[in-house]
Image (cartoon, one colour):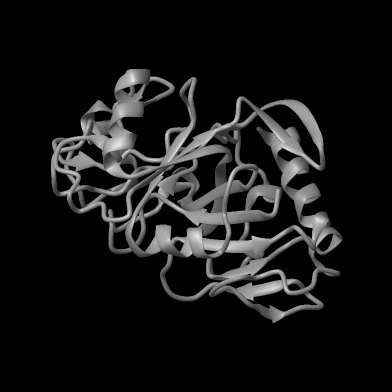
Length: 265
């Protein structure tokens, strides 16, 4: 594992217009962004622990409708974990050397609406790369073979330039060891250790655990940077989907990822 990618997914201020929900029982669900063209699922087709997509939209007062198409990606709660990326975001991943063995940690904007909780950036899932399938024709061939419907290989895919599909490992492998934990999945419940946002601050102000991050060096490979390295704080500003960390020379960050997946996955 050379790279960990903090990958922003789900509703945001432009796409959906609100946070994804943290429920009163502590479970959380990342609501996918809308898609203008036909995709495998509409919001009304989503289901989370018996809660319909229509109910999810009502829970968060979303700006999209149950009959709208959604970009349901990544798929982390299926037998095969997959994540699609394209265009400049995929170019960035490729240029920064992201490849098999590397790990995506997915995060998004979340809020507990039942108690009017704080807006936070919260980790919700992970995917460790087994292989990368590049090109729409190869992606469609793979999805057909596995009988999987996915937005990056469905309908009119012409908008997905530089199209790629990341397929998960069966089991997590970190620091040369294979673990019982799956190579992809969703975090079971909200927990402070999964919250990137510093306590009682705006969601864009992050604080990472000093135990793993204080002694890192040249960690960030693209837009992200420390606000205060000693305090391990980051001011997350602006858009962008993929924030790439160099963990080849910072193995303590691999340990951070392993610990949260083992404890909360």
